[in-house]
Picture 1: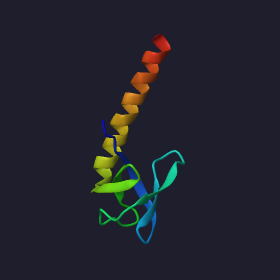
Picture 2 (picture 1 turned 120 degrees about the vertical axis):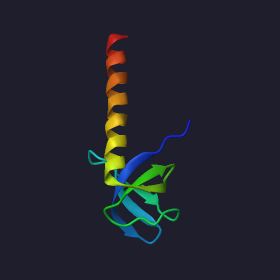
Picture 3 (picture 1 turned 90 degrees about the vertical axis):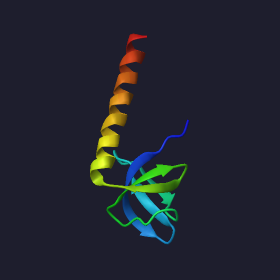
Picture 4 (picture 1 turned 180 degrees about the vertical axis):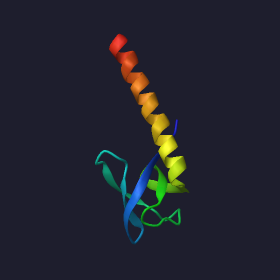
Length: 79
């Protein structure tokens, strides 16, 4: 299974961007596959930005992802 996570582009230097996954999680990712600008949201998989997303798409994806994580935490508490 492949998983890609939205992140906000904070800065770009050459082919590398510093992105924010939220809650203080900052990482360097390669942006050669997309035309991203500072402030854009990108979908990140295996260290590469693979798609530029609208802010609305990114925030909705993150909201859904958080729902999944919360549900999993509840299941673990009961189990």
